[in-house]
Length: 356
Image (cartoon, rainbow, N blue to C red; front, side):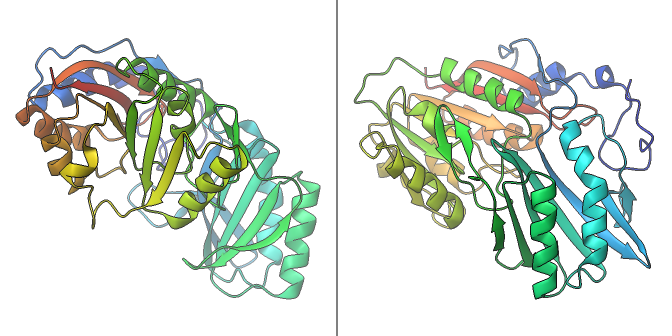
């Protein structure tokens, strides 16, 4: 059972008993709806509580009070967080000093957000506020970062571009032995354990490869999977976010991996890979956004690539995209449910599709 004083108000957890949502069944059901009856499903991988290393918090100023936490269920109201059974305790410990910092900032007038990624050298903090930062604001942010052992702190006005305020330690995260400097607020898998489980399932799903085999990776981000895949074949990766591509490309060049992998900016919703671009690929690995692969699925399904490994965080999107692969003649070789989002209906999974 979840023992949290915020349960029932905070929109982060939907149930108070982790076992009440059968996530093995969620994956089996999603595949069944896609037309894969009795698809093989591996045992559920449960990710421990209090290991989440990334959080995107809402912030609000109410007079002299600063609210910092998640939104109330089906509401824009902010539930002021004082504890959380999902977050790494080091993130929870940052909340009181963050409130003090936000209260003092002229750039934070009414509403904002705080995105924290816990990197190798400590917290990487991005403040999204509703006014331009002043000189004194920046001085206070630097003092906060120093006091809390932060690696980097940045600020942005609304949805604008993040501006570096201070870098106190290398803001890097290591993927499969390769250090990567992510942009402020970058997407990471929620926990290191979840990331490891996903990588393991993806690698176990690869076909037999040679040093010259080619893997096409879609929605590659900053390289969570890319660097692991490059140990097994040549990787040709695509990602829509230019700052994520720049981060991965820099890591490729710094680690002399250009002969093994490449990363290109490509909006796969507006400009999906063509059939010819999948030619001779031994496998395609994709980790699409919550809504699924969208327009890219048509050409991917028609490509005839012998092995497709689909990383999903949304069973409904998996059903939709999986049905397209079934119509193209693919079968499910294996699938792995990963409970990276306890107490919610969200499910991470890795599904291996084979052309048969």
